[in-house]
Length: 217
Image 1 (spheres, helix red, strand yellow):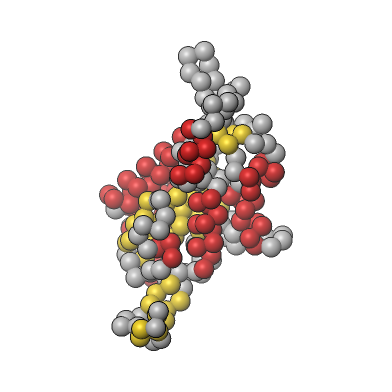
Image 2 (cartoon, rainbow, N blue to C red):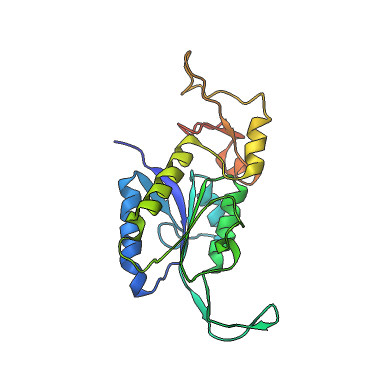
């Protein structure tokens, strides 16, 4: 039996009815791709502070997806001292917290948001990540060619252990003493282990992890 790759999915526990079918299709697609989505309040339930739980869940995940659904609509008000010219649609604040944690951990990131949601990580150029604006009310939004391709490219990065955080990339490149994985390395091919970021190394039980078999030392 194949072992599914665990990935973190940042999404609200509640979405409006018009988004439910598309979300269900997307989650089924992840399952068909051999991915197990983990979300606090959906697949995992906290025994302590939610932020600590998120950090622990991410320590066993190989990538993260941020789904930006409208959660707060500001009909009138001011932004930077100017009156709003149109309603402002915002996602859950947990999208930003969880994206920041995943980014700092060097996890490959895929950010998808409803085409009305803006601000923070949903503004282009904020993150070094795949960012896609799409109509999440469409039942088959995740099957669109561009989105489907992005999901597969992101999955490849998760499997290969390619970090999304540029600092993590530099850290790997600058470490000549990276240990080899004793399970996956052969006489023909050497599989080097990747460093586990400091926030997660204690939880993982080691400083290095194999990107293929997840062996830790």
